[in-house]
Amino acid sequence: MTDMGRLIEPVIPGLRRYANALVRDRAEADDLVQDCLERAVARWGQRRADSDTRSWLYAILHNLAVSRWRALRRRGTMAPIQTVDPAFLSMAPTQEHELARSDVLRALDQLPDEQRAVILLVTVEGLSYDETARILSVPLGTVMSRLSRGRARLASAMADDGPVRSHLRAVK
Image (cartoon, rainbow, N blue to C red; front, side, top):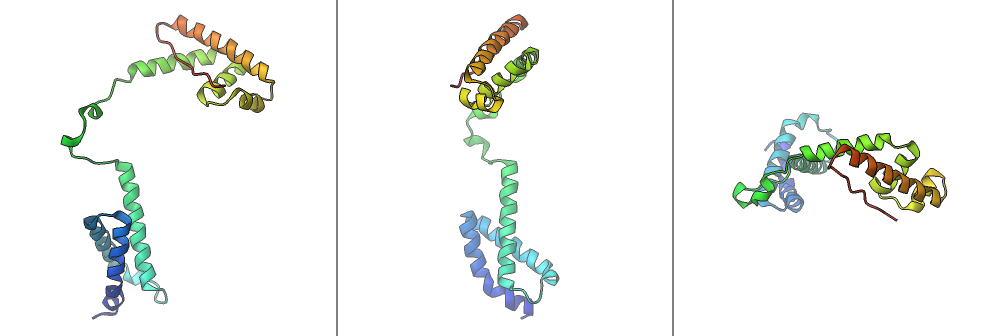
């Protein structure tokens, strides 16, 4: 048996236990251990001779698992097409939403800076009137006044653009 085989073989059962604990799927864990061992054999010459082989192998296994998790997160969840609800396979058209969004942004651009800032902080960011007053360094009444006037101007601008209207939520 080679030096490499003598150092790696006793660690394999522990690698399998660790992989099973990480992924909780025996087949996936076996694939993970296999990939770990392949990488270790291919890069055996890069290992520092004075380092602990066991910790090196566990580090390889862990890094491979993290890489797989990241790849799965990017890909999303996979499911057989027969098990998926047909409502999830289609999307509503987004053109109307994009047009409404454009109308709101255009109407916001027409507002004075003070009113736009208050509307964005309260309705978009969801901040309270008190928080908004502290951020803008103005009295609470000024925030309420600017918000009221800004909403009225925004509603007027949206009514002039056509039937698409936005519902801005109020947060106190």
